Structure formats: C-alpha cells, structure tokens
Image (cartoon, rainbow, N blue to C red; front, side):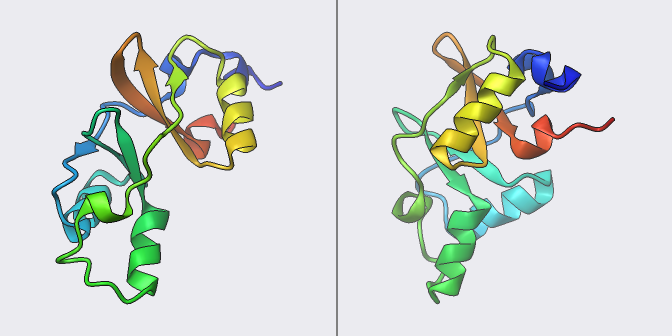
Length: 124
C-alpha cells in the first residue's frame, strides 16, 4: 500500500464540499462543476444525494433539455458515504467494490468533503 493510501481520508479529500439544490437545473450544476473544476456535487437533500458528471453526460446523450431538467430528476439517491477518519486505502476499496468514482466524506453527522480516485492517485 502506498504512503498516500495509509493517510486518513480527511488528509486527501477535496474541500470545501460543493453542494447544489435539488431544484437547480442540470445546466446550472454543470456550470458549477466546470467553474470549480470538479466532477461531482452533493445535492442538499435529506439524506444527501449526489450528482456526477456521468449523470450530466447521460442526460445530454439522451437528448434531454438540461436547461429545463432539474437536478432531482437525474441525481443518485441513497449515496454511500465514508468517514473522514478511515485510511484512504479503505476508501479506495470501498469505491472499487461499489463501482463509484466519488464518495461524500462525513465527520459525525456533518458532510465535510468529497473523495475521488483523483484524490487517491499517487503523485510520487
């Protein structure tokens, strides 16, 4: 296991956590992702959901009008999360087993960041 994978998720996650309303349009969400240079947003629902660039691309490929389509219509609900205190390697194993590219990070009941494969990539 690499040194980066031994570190805690809180040390390698992306912060601040970028969020979006379920009522925003997919076009607004895509603009926010581009502006922040990120590939996923947490949707402020209870419990939180996630919207990824893959969701957005799917809507575009399906010919849907993303300027009128709400985030709620294509977001992924029932999102798995990862505690900030676990090792990055454990988060990687979790993402691999779930087949996902991003996991919201929580400390207690607060969502504090997002971890992705890019965060876990070794730079050495």
